[in-house]
Length: 277
Image (cartoon, rainbow, N blue to C red; front, side, top):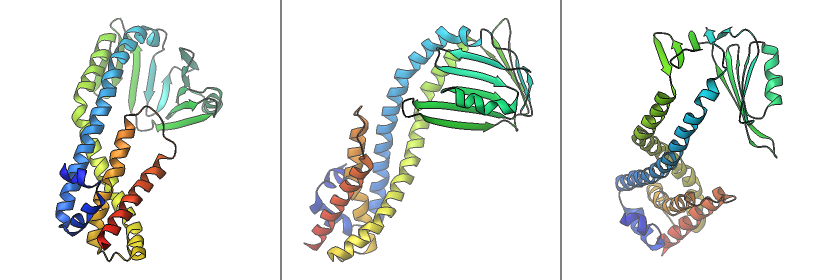
């Protein structure tokens, strides 16, 4: 923690540069641990807000979603049932379509802004983020390896059959599953963020080290590469703290990546200047 505070003081970089690289690596791991804790807490807080809303949405819409859905049967990615076009609209914002005729798929995708299309051998999704700018995201999933799938309505609920398993979906067990997943996701989020930030920040250190070498020669600081690595790790802390602080602000900051790089460059320059003193 003391190293994090000192990283905001350019005069402390002379000591950072001359310490062992192993100590710097240890500091780097501690920093990514702290970042992971903060990001996990932030994400989990958001999940805890969303889960109750999602649970209420399931309660209010479960019957509506499946009220008139036909039996869907797929074998080796090919639609066996239904044999004809099916469409269901939800809240006039989202459309689910089953289209066995391949040539009709892309006209459908062009027609609707938010749509999921179950087609032969493929599941296609299109979501429009900004209607004014027509910013759409498309995803396609290959169903060729799906050996068998069947969804049908029963008196107890929605029965889903896959190889070796039969699942019964009811309003209650879907809601309970959502809550269980939310309660057990914290350690998974932490592991994801820890490995993500270890990789991402390490890549940043090595990419910025190229800039450090150039700046080191221009300023005639006379630092070795190990000293530049040490400086680079500590100089990464102030812009990272700035990024974390901004993540809690519900306002989009234009060109933040440029601000991040500039903040890093400022601390790197001040650190190399301190090495000359």
